[in-house]
Image (cartoon, rainbow, N blue to C red):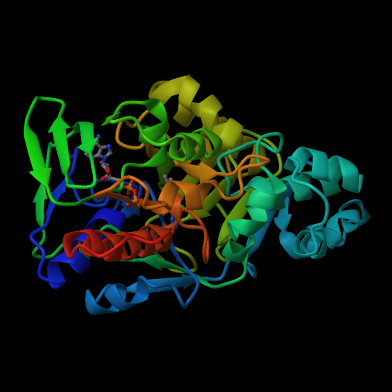
Length: 416
Ligand SMILES: Cc1cc2nc3c(=O)[nH]c(=O)nc-3n(C[C@H](O)[C@H](O)[C@H](O)COP(=O)(O)OP(=O)(O)OC[C@H]3O[C@@H](n4cnc5c(N)ncnc54)[C@H](O)[C@@H]3O)c2cc1C
């Protein structure tokens, strides 16, 4: 989304633009699978967050059908060994102690510390601790001991719960495909080396092909940058290397499950699990008669464990979990097909998305900084507003990088 967004903006300004893509499809971490059910199923990003997202213009222009998913109202939780509608859990005195958590986050004081240290400081125990852990890390690919409190707030992660989310019924990947209309995309072009200077950029593929340009935008995912799979010549400035080291890409995995019949409550938009191998479950057809497909979504340590189990065992682990969470329904008997999507081992992302550990606030700005001559920086990890590392963030980063690349092309000075 960052790459095609930047390319379209530059091309519309008259520049000759080429997108180099390692894979064979447009979308990257937006990937809709069309051979699993009678409707597209999202293997990567699933939702347009909020009604004001910058991506809405293209969703509408592309004529994509969307469905609102009212999470807050129709959330179910598995807490303290029981699966119930969230308001019923909230009547349990064991969770009341954690009710001040959102207020505490909005008024966070003191130095940066991990979510685990914050929970300890607040004295949450039992169900209150489970709820606090979910509030702080369910969306993030890091454990409570890894995620930093200041980063969580500055990344706007809590906004994800505030607005209405929408699912793109026709498949989310039609959005980047629409943005890429008319853009020259070269597939199977895995960049292995980037030589940069103030005068221009030369990129080399892993098969030796070389291309040079007056300016370039990199949208390499942070996981790929951190792995060292791409060499930079000369080496990146220390502030950039420090930013790459401080930001963390974590594991995110999905198990897609198709059943004979729906066994979950009809108006369940999501099921959030306090424990077990899966963080969240959501049906892909909320409140409608669509395909009985459930997506198991695991983040951080839970996703790492599924990744280690691998594609043969991960679906079994999730089905065992569903037997635990819905003991009367015997989901195992109803399952027809299962597919494991592991973003951690995908060479084109090497992880799901990023979070900031304690002390890493400011690293996204350093990653985004135009301090490498004619090479400018985009990608969802370079944006922190309104919410870091989303499809919208990726698109916004592309627009910003296009302005910076355009300044290089016209000989204007780049300002941070
Ligand atoms: C499971 C999952 C669920 C998510 N859910 C949501 C959600 O509901 N809503 C939301 O807004 N966001 C969500 N996200 C985050 C969102 O998908 C990403 O932040 C966003 O799509 C990233 O866009 P990008 O353009 O920065 O990077 P990418 O989409 O990763 O694009 C980078 C591109 O670079 C290519 N590439 C990699 N290495 C090379 C190389 N060496 N040479 C050439 N090309 C290369 C890749 O193939 C890829 O196409 C989710 C992510 C995951 C993984």
